[in-house]
Length: 464
Image (tube, rainbow, N blue to C red; front, top):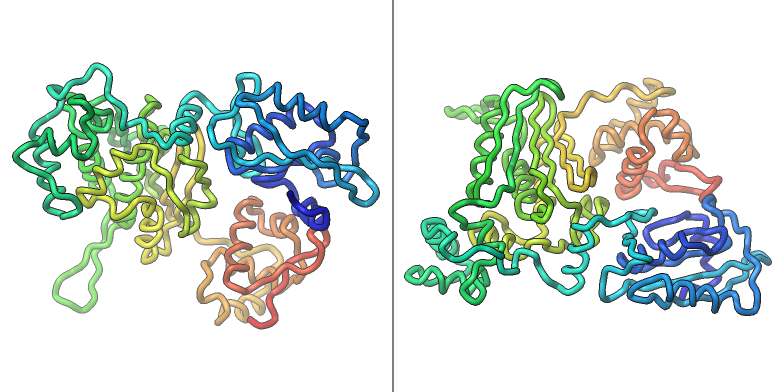
């Protein structure tokens, strides 16, 4: 349980992944507890408004027991949270805390929710199945593929796979007995192929397509392909199409030979494609969709991030990945197509280090993951800026900060004490973008927040 002393500060910080405010106890409160139980756990504070104002509640002698009974009867498996009344500034609030539930998913009257950022997300059928298998540490692709036998698998594809595995030395397989090799890797169980084996080695592939188009405008398609093949093959086919539609320049560094420089780093594009193929939800019939425009490339993969992973965590280099398709991922690892589990986005950022003109965006939308490689547009001068400040700030302080963040730093130096909302208004940028730039500047020790959460603002650090 959290101590009373820190609640005023936590309330001032606002709702979060693990905290929700409610003015009164109701069905929505129970839905939030379910969402917390299906994620990292969390606390509902009853008697606090959405804006963080402590309004308090009136409690009878049996009120807390009645709430506990309602929570137990409305959830399955039944949740039994800790409930305690607190006194803040002479007003009573109720703290209802639930820990992450060990067996998921939990539902309330047949509805399933999961906490993402500061809101509850209703789960669809595919997400419910994913959460159940993750809870039991199962993997969909490890189940026997109903209706398939070993005769549906391509001996040539299996032999090629075994050869590559032995060549890269990450596992030793007997090339004279392919079926024994697949049994060893759990691609065959009781002599029957798993879904992973069908995805990787089938003679007639399951129709999970990679649909790629070259667009001049959103509604003008120049070239369009649909690749349907087993997974190793479809990666190579898709990559060849992508490369054929990317412009390339030639650089000379004084040596005899010229050097090619593609408009986008090919290793980063390959990693993004591998992530889409390896980690997509194969219980979702949608296609992987890749769109190549003049100024950007987007890749959409069906299925949101697996195992509770968030976009914010993906953007950090210390995230821990959970595998939706463990055997598929292992197959790509064994042939050295991926270096280690959970490193894909890190490697993309590393490949982009020499391409400062490319912006990399990761989003969860349309029931899947969308990544975008976009050519950066020149930033217009910010409103209220003067030439004198620009020259003085950018000269030496912002060497390790990207151009967007440096513009924000200039504005903060010229007008100390600005709040996030004021920065949004002055720049015309979305609040999420401003918050990301502020984090970059704080991480670089260039700015600091001074004052109370609601009345303070941002200042240049005096030691920078």
